Structure formats: structure tokens, C-alpha cells
Amino acid sequence: MVRTLSCSLLVLLVPSSALAATLTVGAGKTYADPCAAIAAAKAGDTIEVDPGTYTVACKVGKSLTVRGVGAKRAVLDAPSSIPNGKGILAVEGGETDLVAEHLEFTGAAVGSNNGAGIRFQGRDLTVRDCAFHDNENGILTAPQRNVVIESSEFYDNGAGDGQSHNMYIGDAESFTFRASWSHGSRKGHLLKSRARKNIIVASRLTDQTTTPSDNVELPNGGASYLIGNLFEQANGDAGNMIRIGMEGNKYGDATQLLLVHNTFVNHRNKGAYVLVNSSVTQPTIVANNLFFGQGGLPTEKVTSVGNQMLALSEVGSDLVSDADYDYHLKAGAPAIDAGVDISQYLGGNALEQYVHPLGAAPRTKQGSAPDVGAYEFGDSGEGGQGGAAGTSGEGGQGGAAAGTSGEGGQGGAAAGTSGEGGQGGAAAGTSG
Image (cartoon, rainbow, N blue to C red):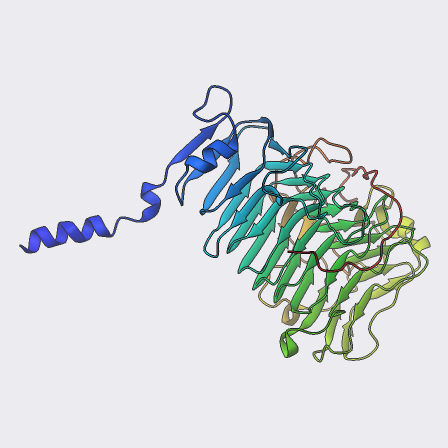
């Protein structure tokens, strides 16, 4: 009797993941397109999609992994009329999770201007090594638990109304944006998040040849860590670079902005580097950041240490290439060894530096003190984590991510997107 009970317990303890299936999509595979595989899948299954272009708009109502396989990303191209009225992958259900990997999302447009590569109304969303371009929103999420984006590229998204963005994260518990590149949105923000906690690390957010709104907009506040990033604003009608709490401090004393080891280049002759709403009670931390060009910082409730503010004309002598948005330090730059210890401001986050395209590597102090800005001079960054190549579309950056080249910097030039000119004002909330 005891032996029989033990066997029964063993059967009950087999994890559900052991029962998960892998469904294949592509020419000669079980399913011809991802939507058919999604419809047939059960919760916990993985869908593997061969390279190619698939004209699809799929509803997802169960927890799945959808993954491109092969050297090139599978392209999910929206039809001219999206049947679900939301996006290429429309995820619904309070306990529905989605993992999307090695996919390209393009062409999502609907009548409300809220068409998205991924329209997420589920629980947890993880995106790795994906590209989103030429959608009204790259990613648009409703309130959810956790959103993680790693090694992904966003460009040329937006309906041109200033209210649709490269990505728009709703009231999540936490949002992480790491080792990723957002550039050239069409009048909207490069990144907008209403999450309670925002972790934006080792990433590149650059207007380049377009004039979007803000680089980062955090309208409801939240505990926000911006560490090791590159920020650039074009010389146009764009707004400010970073704003927090401008629609009210929803999260009260939990709201705090921590800017650590970032490099800012403002090609515009006005605007602010950072705007913090007066309702934010916690001090803004600004530590070891490198600023070029005109721009303001908070003057009240701020802790500012180890920063350098330089004229835009000094970019050429201090950074490897302004034209290529390569913000590694040159030999002799005054930022070298000019920083201070910032370990108390990291909030448990690792200190990394961005590796172009779509990678990150640990940052290691090379001299007597840390360097100011997003890069440590002489730190090769080899062995860093990197995503696959960027998209091959207009403005896309090809080539797998490699470690930085150390002294002299990393030389991979990033092509700017064509985008659309003009800035459409601060973004408002989307409709549903």
C-alpha cells in the first residue's frame, strides 16, 4: 500500500513543463503560420518559427513561448486590416504569460492608432532579441505584473500623432529595459512607462535623424533606475530628454529617479536633460553622468555627485564619434578617472555598459577612480552578452553584438532612421 502511494505521488509531482510540446512553423513544418500553431497549442507550449515573412495577426489566450529559429529573425508582418483590432500578437487573460524571442514585428496599424507589434493585456511579458518597426506602437501594454525587454530594437514606430510610441508600458509592477536600442520614433517617445519600478540599464536611446518627443517619459513616477545608458536628442522640435511624474506622482514616496553613469548628448539648443515634477518627494540622484550641450537638471531635492557638464562643441574632442553616436571616451578626455563611488545608488542592479548593437557587458573600473559617463575607458567589454543582429530594414543595424574595442572605443556606426520630422507634444494615454 505504501509503495502504491509513493508511485502516485511521483506521478503527481512531475512538473507541468515536462508535458509541454514544441510546435513548428514554416515550409514543410507542421503549421504554415504562427497563428495556426498558437490556436493548436496548449498553455506552456513553445512555438518555433522558421525564418521567413508571415502575414499574421494572432490572438494569444494562453501562456506560450513564441520563438524564431535560424540565423535570421522570423518576420511577423501585419495584414492591412487586423482582425483582432489590436496588434500582431494580441495577448489577453489575467494569467497569460508570453515569451517572444528572435522575431521581427512590423506594419501594425488600426483605426484607433493603437496598433502594436505586441498588444499585451496579460500577466508577464518577456521580449528578447526582437525588432519592432513601422508599427503605430512597438509594444503597448495594459496593467500587468512584469515586463522585461532585452537585446531588442525599436525604430520608426508611431502614428505621427505624438500619442503613439516606440514602446508604451502600462501600470506594471516592474519594467526592465536592458541591452536594447530605441531610436527614431515618429513624434512619440522612445520609451514611455507607467510602471511602479523602472530599470533602464546599459541601453541606447537616441533620436538620431528624427525628432521624437522625450527619450524617456515616466508620467506616473515610480522607483526608476537609469544606469549606464546613452541618451541623445536631435536638433529639432523635440521635447526634453527625461521626465518623471509629470501626470502626478501615483506611487508616492516610492517614486525616486536615480541617474547613474549615463552619457547625454543634447543637439538641441534648449530643453532639459531631466524634469522632475514637484510632487516627487524623494531626492533625485544624479551621479557620474556626462552631459554635453544645453540642458537643465533639478535644482531642488537633488543629490548631485561626480557629474560633468560640457559644451556640445567638446563632444568631438572627448567622444569617439558624434556622427556615429559612439560615445566611448577618447584618450585624454576629462571624464577619465573623474567619477566617485556610486555603489550605494545602484539599488542592487549590476553596473554594465552598452555594447552595440543590442548587447551589454560588465563594467570594470580601470583607473584610480571610475570614469564619468556610460563607458569606462580601456574596458574592453569582451565577452559581453549580446543579441542577434538588428533588423535589416531602414535604419536597422546589422551584425551580431561584440564586446567594445576598449581604448579608442567601439566603431560600429549606427544608421539613423528616416522617420518623420516635427514633435507632437507630450504623449497622452492611449485608449484601451
